[in-house]
Image (cartoon, rainbow, N blue to C red; front, side, top):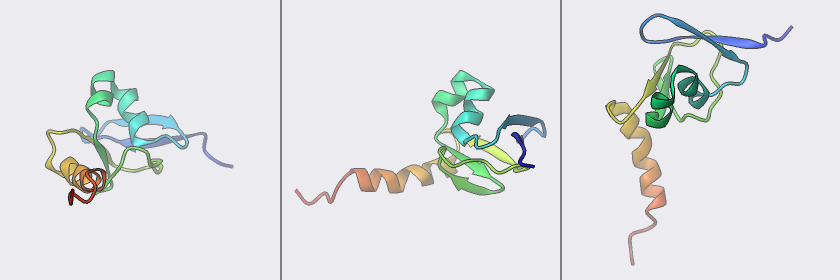
Length: 88
């Protein structure tokens, strides 16, 4: 039988229950609209990921904002791709 929901552990030790297939963006929205707007990436079991990947059940999860240097590591490669070749 497949679980209809997942549980993730937040940095403060609290647990959040979400529907199966929920993403980092979904978690940020469930915590609050301010965090959802500020979220840039998510750290899952120590690995930084983008917000669109589904979260695994039982994971330790932290939402990263521009205040977290690891979030900038996610943005840098995306900015390089979006910026084109720069050889105008």
